[in-house]
Length: 146
Ligand SMILES: [Zn+2]
Image (cartoon, rainbow, N blue to C red):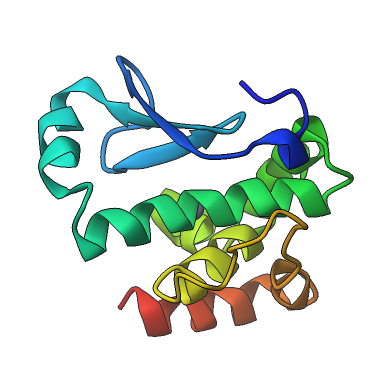
């Protein structure tokens, strides 16, 4: 665990028994990437591939978002949960609210460009999405997750 998001030098992948929830491949957890034990073999096989690099970059974008939220894991996770709830999971479903989260929108839109979050000074593309109404974010997310 990195005490401060900006102190994360590289991302480390660890096997986890309970995280991420079923249906998700990886989760950023205080600067580490957790992959379910049952998916570790798949991760080991794909880690050097383009898909593996994109997955790690996606999680690295989340680390850089935490840098941009006062360089605090607490603020990042509070904001993440807040925006998830703003995505109205009771109306759009858990996946709908997840994909419409400004942090996920920034990460999914940019994770394929491996130079997007190459530094350690934070990213703030999520702020553009945070200004949108929930319905607009849901519409934007459906472009990528139809
Ligand atoms: Zn994500």
